Structure formats: C-alpha cells, structure tokens
Length: 217
Image (cartoon, rainbow, N blue to C red):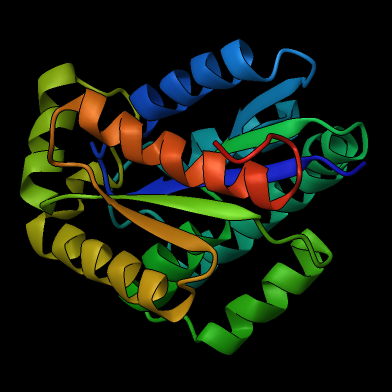
C-alpha cells in the first residue's frame, strides 16, 4: 500500500520544526508498524542540500525569483525521485518541511513568477506527486521573524528580505489555503505549542481514518 505524504508550510518562525517533531512522536506512539521518513526542502539529498546552501545564504537580492524557482524545482526533482517516491512505495509516512506551496508563495505570489510557469515546473519536478495533507502554520509574520532572530538561525537570506516581504508571504499562504481547502489545513500557530500540536494531530488523525489506517474513535 502506498504511504502518506504530509507537508508542513508557513512563514519564518511559525514552529514547523517543533510541530514536525511532535507529530513524529505521536505517530511512533500510535502507529508503531509504520515507518516514518522525515525530510525537508530545499534539501533531502546530498545534491539537493548543496542547492539549499546556495539558496538560503548570502544577500537577499542574490537571486532573481525565477532563478530561485528553477533551483528549488531542480532540488525538488532529486528529492522526489530519490527520497519521497521510494519511501511512499515502501508504505512509509513521509513528513516534509516545505514543498511546492512554498515555491508558489515565495517565488510566485511574492516574487511575481507566473503561476502557470510554476505549475509546469511542478509537473516536471514532481511527476504528479501532490501531498495528501498540508499543515499550514499561520501566525503574524513579525512575531515569526522575531522568533527566528531570537534563536539566531544561520540560514538567514529569506529572513533578511524585510517585514513587507514576509507579510505578503503570510497572505500568499492564506490565499493558497483558501484555494485548496481539501488539502491544506490552516492552523493558528500563534498559540502555545501544545494547542497547535492538538490541531496538527487532529488533522492527521482524520487523514489516517479516511485512508483506513486507523479506526475512527
């Protein structure tokens, strides 16, 4: 049986890393016969991680949005072919920190790259692969940036693009969630982490029930 593909999205500092770890812990406690694959974008393979290094470091104006989109898609293709699809074929649950929605928001909605062109890059890089569920952690962009500054993230190129950029990123994610309500679950990430985790687990539980992987409670 094909596994499940779950992605996390959100602006800088929205808590994706924390919630991915909490979801991992819950799945391991409740589905001990299922293997997990935790991964991230850009990245996931040695080659894709080298592209990540180029994309996430350096001056904010280092790359044009269209260049970023092509680099993200090149990284993603390696990731999909060598990591995500093989894991799904084994029946694993794949949890990925960012996927195509980030490209459509950062390089498309904010950067101005035409959505139809991004759809074409998705078709090339993903070969029809779409997440079964996307968890959008939504919160005020300034509060999220403050979190990243506080913890001193090393990969700071996108964080340095300014408040107006990140406000637009948030709006782009919200509009994308409205466009794909059957796939994207928008969760208020401004609350305490435990409250966010409850909503994350509820959304994933509903998916597992729908796929027949656990019984409805």
